[in-house]
Length: 80
Image 1 (cartoon, rainbow, N blue to C red):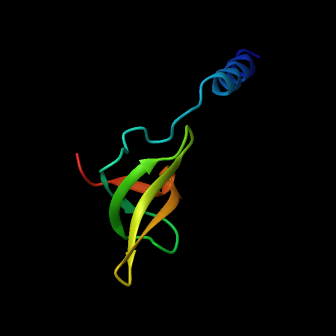
Image 2 (image 1 turned 60 degrees about the horizontal axis):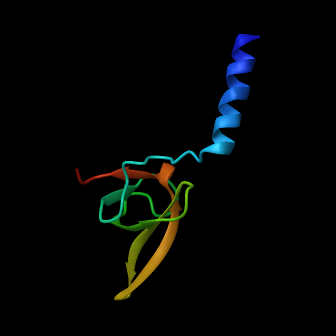
Image 3 (image 1 turned 30 degrees about the horizontal axis):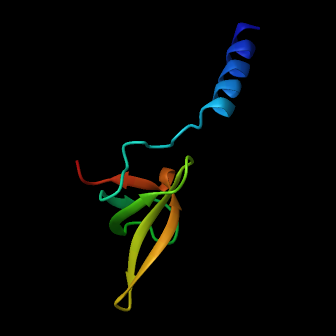
């Protein structure tokens, strides 16, 4: 029963204060994509999007820069 109450409290806190996934990933960092069709690609973080886990990265294709949104869960920070 205590575990259930603790879980309910965590849910309440999450509603009050957004949880940022991988807060260590910030603008300017070099990251590697770890999942999906772009797996293995290293790129730069342009910005974090709002208060969720969306990270805007820079993709360069055919000499064109594209801002692309990915989940922070799919990124591994390369720079310190």
